[in-house]
Structures are given as C-alpha cells and as structure tokens.
Amino acid sequence: MDASLEAYEAERADFERVLRAIHAIRLASESQLASFDWLLETIRQVGLVPIPEYEQTYAGEEEFINASQQGLIQLPREFARYLLIAARERPATYLEIGCFNGATASLATAYLQRFNSQLQATTIDLWPAFLFYSEVRDLLPLHYEVGKTSFNFRDVHFDSVFIDGDHSFDWSWADYQNVGRRARLCAFHDIANAPYLDLPLGGVCGAWELLKQTDKGSHFEEIIEHPSGRIMGIGIRRAV
Ligand SMILES: C[S@@+](CC[C@H](N)C(=O)[O-])C[C@H]1O[C@@H](n2cnc3c(N)ncnc32)[C@H](O)[C@@H]1O
Image 1 (cartoon, helix red, strand yellow):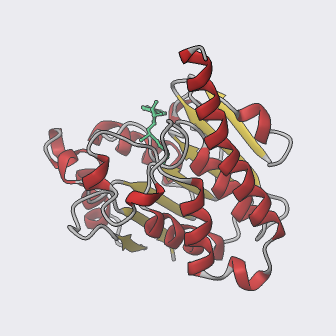
Image 2 (image 1 turned 180 degrees about the vertical axis):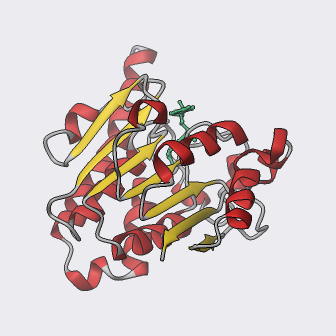
C-alpha cells in the first residue's frame, strides 16, 4: 500500500477511538460519569500521542500509546481528575486554547455536555491539526477555529477555560489575562513540567506560580500524577 495512504488510515483508525469515547460518554450512566475509574479507562482507550520522550512522559501508561498523532497529550489520571472537577461547575461555555488534534477538546465537550445540555464549547489552535473535526462537528456542540489566539476572544466570556497552547510565560499569561481571568474556572496544563522551568520566567510554570502569589481571592488546586512530580501537571484556579 502507498505509504501516505497507510499513514492516513492509521490516523483515521486512531481517531475512531475518539468517536467511540464520545459515544460512550453520551450513553454513560450517572454513576459512570461520576466514577474516576470509568473516566480513566475511557480516556486510556482514546490513547496517547507518542510525543518525544514519550516513555518517560507516560511512565506507567505505556500500553495506551498510539502509533499515530491522534489521541491525548495528557496523563490520563490527570485529565480524568480535571474533568471531574470541571464538571462540578456545570459550565455553559468552555474554551480550550491549543487543541492540536482535538482529542482533549472533544472529550471535554462530550463530558461537560452531560452536566449542562446547553454547553457551547470552542477550541482554537494556530495550526489546523484537528484533521477529523468534520466528524465531531455534528456530534458535539464544539466550534473549532484555526489561526486564532486568545487575543481574538478578549471580548468573549467563557465559564471555563483550559490553557494548553504556547507554554512560554508570555503566552500563558496573555491567555490568562485575555480569557482565563474572567472564567469561573481556569486550568493550565503543564504547570509542573520541568523543561518549561528553563524558559524565560519559568514558562507556564512561572505564570502559574505568579498567579498563585498574586490572586488571593481564588482557590488553587494542582493535579500532578507523574511519579516524578516533574512532568505535565494541571493547575486549576477557581473563583470562590
Ligand atoms: C501541546 S499541544 C496541545 C495538546 C492538546 N491540548 C492535548 O492535551 O492533547 C499545543 C498546541 O497549541 C498550539 N498553539 C501554540 N501556540 C498557540 C497559541 N498562541 N494560541 C493557540 N494555540 C497555540 C500548537 O499549535 C499545538 O497544537
């Protein structure tokens, strides 16, 4: 078979896992939706993107690594815990910044829609990597915009925001100021990711620390599941 056709089919086959997870979430009972173990297994079945140094990054989750660029760039235990916390707020509007292939945005939208049937989600990225968006567009209230940043949404209110775009300090801080600040719940991905500490001002890790030091009126929670405590991590700022 032609190599590029084979590669395309591998991507499409792995994206099928996202569609299966969307359907599973739509059909899930309330006790399944509330179950960390059920959510964890659902996320694991979508699979993980083999990013550079994936063996170290996904320590303990190796069997869930996909062969293609479809899946999540998350630690499943962290993303499951994040979704459980995000659902408590029952957001009506949700924004993910930096969706890459769209797996995280699709899962979050499917899950949060079960807690608020009026949910409208938006996801953005600079690059058009959400190859199979047309297949989720009719299944989910998820709007996808390419070539946009948080600056394009400065006048839009979102109840909940997930920041996972450019992990520099400047961009993380700008994303927060543009849209995260006004959200009831704002999450940052990679708050404990050691390599970002070497970026100027500590990258997104530095932005998260600065936020914790300066915003005394919010509640802060950290989800860090990697055995080293120094990879990925999700920080959640919640208005009280
Ligand atoms: C690590 S990936 C996101 C992965 C996805 N959220 C997940 O968890 O699987 C980061 C994405 O952010 C995008 N990106 C980089 N800078 C951005 C910016 N300033 N605004 C929006 N997206 C950006 C990149 O193109 C890339 O697709």
